Amino acid sequence: MTRPDPRTTLRDAGARPASTPGPRSRETWRTALRAAAIVLVASLVVGGLTSPAQGFLPDPVRPFANSAGGWSMLAFLLVWASGARPPLGALLGAVSFVAMVEAYGVVSLWRGYFLADPLSSMWIPVGLVAGPVIGLAAALVRRAGRGWVVVGVAVLSLVLAAEGAYGLLLLPGTTGAAYWLLEIVLAAAFLAAAVLRGRRIDGATH
Image 1: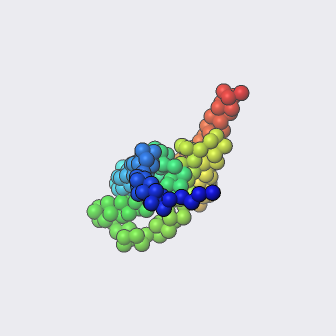
Image 2: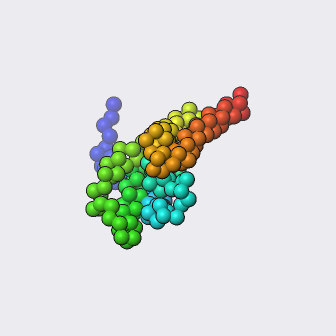
Image 3: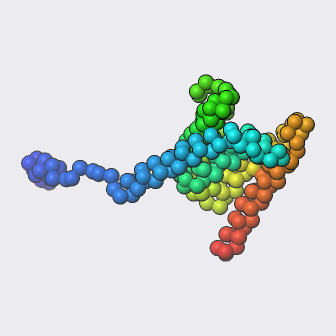
């Protein structure tokens, strides 16, 4: 058994090119940055618009501009539209909620209404807890298999149904019942659509 020549080994090692990120790695980073930019910018715009929206939306749907279910739908839609993968989607869900809350506060202040100091609203911790769940659910719907699509939609449907029931029981005297009923209907419709879509995919593959 012969020993390797140290000079040859060192020469070969020095001849190897340093490892560089491949095209797929670079594309992954570009995709992630693009998704983050989409969610951040759109969340700031949407959050800012919800402040004046409280004044011009029709009475039956006015609670949409200031409801957890409404903002959850918006965050879900933005993360889904960004195409983020599940780990990043969870992070972007939190980013979306925080950005919407802060933009809402800034625009409200411009309009003469003080919400809270920066990053001190009661909705910030709520967004940091609920945002990753909503973001992960949206990313699963966009990126995962059929079973996970139903799970992801079920998360959003649960939020809508729970808030709708809460609004119907405790808030109909101040906000009316129309929006809360709409949330419950949307929750059922979203989940039914996800299940039916899954069945059609199963039927097409068999």
